[in-house]
Length: 242
Image (tube, rainbow, N blue to C red; front, side):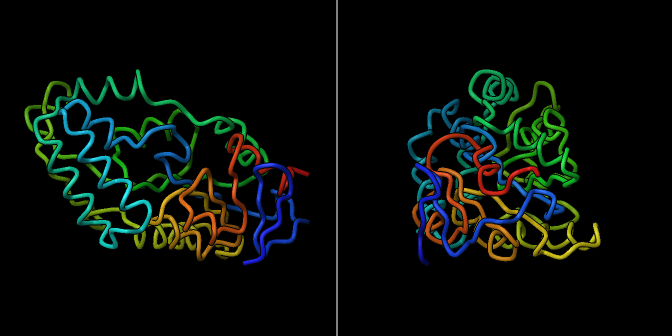
């Protein structure tokens, strides 16, 4: 794809500026390393003393070197067995931060009339809180199985199957974006999809505007907009509010 640097750290590929935020009806975000600053599974693993092993699997999956995302996630979650809910709370309160510009971009989208979707290969323990914190309309992610109670229990190393399936991988992210589009009565071309890893490419591929945020090389190369420095709200330099 032909690349043009609109301004330092903001690269366009086969995309001609001219549209406004109000031309779109839905924006879909990945969570880990996109809306937030961490990969939650890696930080949970740190509590189990297994961060190096888990982070290596995460990195390979995000680069697209492990093609079976579901299996890679199962492998990582297995290594979380025995981690307490208190450790998850600590990850949320002490390590997790919204990435720069997250509040501003979500607020601008909502003001412009867009609905907001959070679709993540991460976990509901975190996505539900981010959804409520930012006023996001729809969210889909994975449920960690807990034994011993939701307040004082520990992780079993497994995930709970949900009505839509077992694991939210790249294919499920794409399906969710299309499902929400249908629910809203809009076309995929009226959607924006933002992510950083290989499992975001399927939903980015069907959206009218694909945006990479501080992403892996393969994702940057396939996105219409690549934010390579600065915050999420730099998207507003490409598609202004008015």
